Amino acid sequence: MKEFVIWGVPPNKTDEEPIFTKATSMKDAEDYIKIFTEQFGVTKARIQVLDLNECPSKLFNSKDILNEDPWERDDERQERYDWGDE
Image 1 (tube, helix red, strand yellow):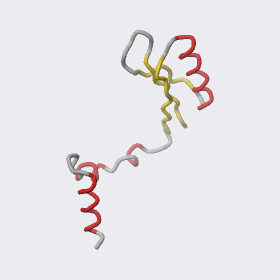
Image 2 (tube, rainbow, N blue to C red):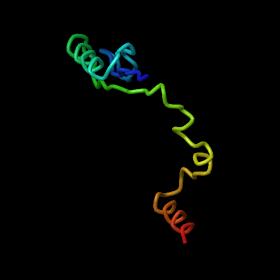
Image 3 (cartoon, helix red, strand yellow):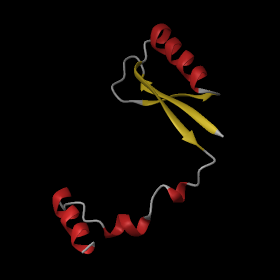
C-alpha cells in the first residue's frame, strides 16, 4: 500500500507543511496539486510517496550510521574503503 502525501507552502506562510494525505494514486495526487496551486494558492507543491509495505528498518542500517564519521570527507571515506579491499 502506498500513501501519496502532498506537501507545499500555504498562502501567507513561509514553511512547507503537509497539505493533503488522502490521494489514492500518483495521478490523483497530481490532480489535487493542480487544485491546491491554482485555486488555493499553495506554492512549492510536491508529492511524497510512502510505501507502507516496505519495512522501515530496512531503509537504514543503524550499525553503519553509528560507525560513520559525519565530519569525514567523502574522499577520506573512499580511501578507507579502498584500503579494506586490498
